[in-house]
Length: 253
Length: 249
Image (cartoon, rainbow over all chains, first blue to last red; front, side, top):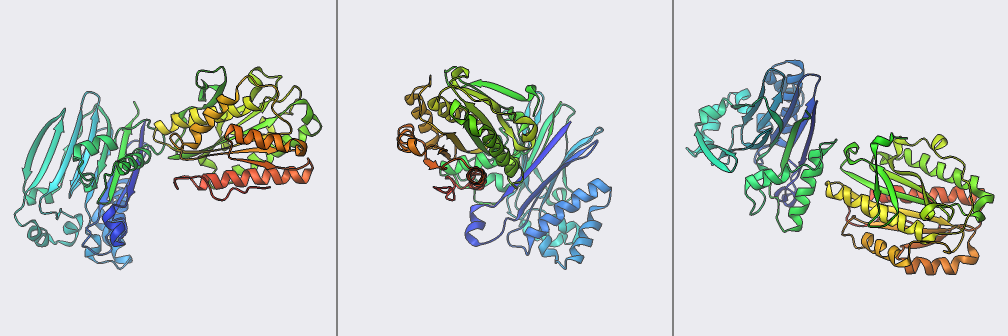
């Protein structure tokens, strides 16, 4: 049996600037599969809080109904009279199925993958601060994306048992999506937006571990853990500067 | 009522007092208010025992309708010197959806003397112990308790010091976000002075005189309790107790 949960909340910068939370997450378990999705809107975009939600729900709907994501997104965007700058949001998702389980990054974010015998922490980082947004694919705006990169690095950092490795990838490779196959002995996988790296003076790996230190897996387990971790950080004077979204799937063997 | 296998039984501190509670892995929300109602079932309340039972049923039914019902756990205990340790649970901490008060609340059989300290120790202690367990598992928790009596303390095994220590834990805010405690006197006008003094000594938040027992008064008491419970639940996450709990009924 798989259980799931999701949580998102606004960061300090947006509270101070009067902007809404532009991160969104959702997770769903079906009879034989499950999916968790995170979407992070570009703060210099348009109505990206709405765009992030549309993108996440379009991905969910496409997954459930086996439809093409781009058709669902474009249909919703036009019905709501949104522009492409309103859709500038990352899309990170993970699905678990009997035959395969996969983690996918369009844009930046991180993941904590717990296997029976080890844990992997993954961070996808764009040095340009301008990650690949799924809407570039849908609006054929590849040139904009390339220009924003300014030849800066895109890296995939992986930490397994305290061993950190880094792999650089090209903008072209990032735009095709970063696909990571998950192993069979999976216990849980939790994905985060890049807000995971925005806790002042807290390393992304430490934040990943703190935000997934689950006490029990009943009901709103991710909400409890993330809310408590952020509250505890606050008490220590650690601010969460950016919005954060998390979504999790747990395999109750 | 939930199955026994879904409940834990725990000793309060190092004492012989116990309480039962829903197992944490059955609690799916992010936050809970713990509600305790302790009802005097000594000999002197026999004449209105059925009215007290109806009052309890009214409270539970009102709370079941609250939009916050899924975020509240209630424990109901009876107190009298006829029980071991002066206290007997009607039921431990349970979700309101798991209680059918018409079926689960039998007639109250009355007798014995008034172990008020036992009732308060059991109430505070259970809320503190269970509350800590929930907080340690990342739940956000606050608490409210009502001890309803018509008489003065005269038969407890728990000492006033034990009550004071447990009451302090709740008030300090170190375990729970907030704890509100209300001592309710019914038919207790003559004992009002003593009960006020008991409330001060024990560290209970407030004393409320519910007046003489009439159907109307008990209905008002039921309304007061359910309204206070609702206000407490809405205050979760604000960092302090509800500001909306009335000082009188």
